[in-house]
Length: 76
Image 1 (cartoon, rainbow, N blue to C red):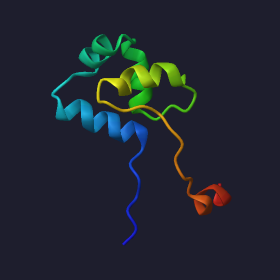
Image 2 (image 1 turned 180 degrees about the horizontal axis):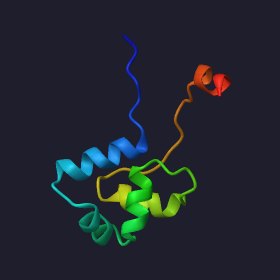
Image 3 (image 1 turned 180 degrees about the vertical axis):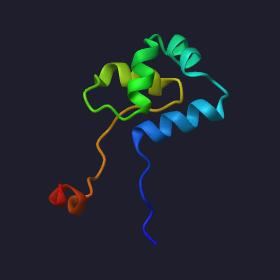
């Protein structure tokens, strides 16, 4: 069975909950605004990479290239 990759928004929401953080607490720890965290968790696609990396850094991660699902891309 093929494993479906987790989205960035899903990953961050799961990590935030795993560490028992509210969106406000995560925003404060990452040095970004609450609105940014909300947009990120909702999957907004026009966010800046540097701010996303600020948040990911708290969990020992950073953005990087990922293989894309060509079939999904072609069907859009």
